[in-house]
Length: 391
Image (tube, rainbow, N blue to C red; front, side):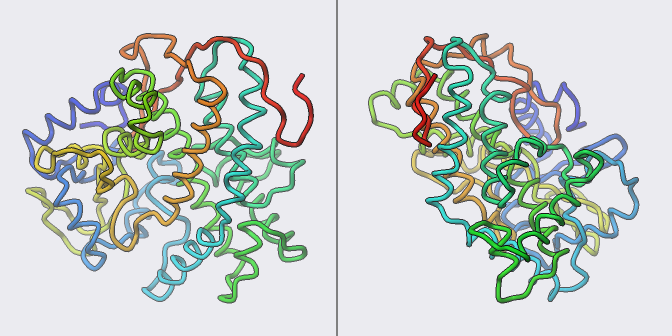
């Protein structure tokens, strides 16, 4: 199965169900042209892989060395400089976790509000919008830029969720260079932001370590977060029962988010692992140093683990084990606040086209429509959070 094809993107759930019926817990797939991988599609087998770092480590160096640098699968499969040993690996995880734990959740709420209101005001009077391009994507990246500590005057020049943060060109400079410049400025004058917290951390992280972790946060934080916003909006606008339950107060926006994390998570396939010795996964023989991916979408919908999911958060959308996403609380808060701001301002949002006509991104990893056009009754602009009067 070619996971990078438009055919797969158009029928993800049907294809996963057919895979599970025909192949059980794992199947060989292609994540880019001539780039094979083993995809775990059984829930219990996925937990085994994600919980066994000894047999399924995340070290991709050998595999990466066999591929060209422009392979489109690399940005989602490789995180900068792989750790040479367990000590370096633990240090890298400590840097990333320290950065995430330092984020002020009250500041996150304020950042979402300051980003959401101008964006909503830019289209609320028109009666229609593409909520991916005009709301979810720019909101997510503006919030991340603010949390990372970029100066206000430079935020609009930064990329909006590039496919590869290291290759995004900003006036002749890569995003990696831009981050390195940011780290240097925070060493001179730290502030109340993620980069400054990493710079001043007692562990004494080097500049290269901080840049690598900021890139990881950006790559793994931006696209999945904005896609979770639009996938949840899509559920709310197309599932009549769920919409009615939300309006009645029986279910909450958080319930909608949790349902999407089960049924249509924004990172459909991920959690790459690279066994050092050949392994058997399900009924598939995996050669040494070849990638094993987990499909949260397939595993969450594995018929072997069905049942009522209301209030249940046993999904694999954030991964599992020691490499589970430490930013899930921050990401969920951004999504919930973004949805609350939008639905408070425009509660009568409806999809502008039949759901079956939506075109989905042909990505082996990300799950979201190419666009999500909606309509709503035109509304007056919201008051600016800074205190300025709306036009």
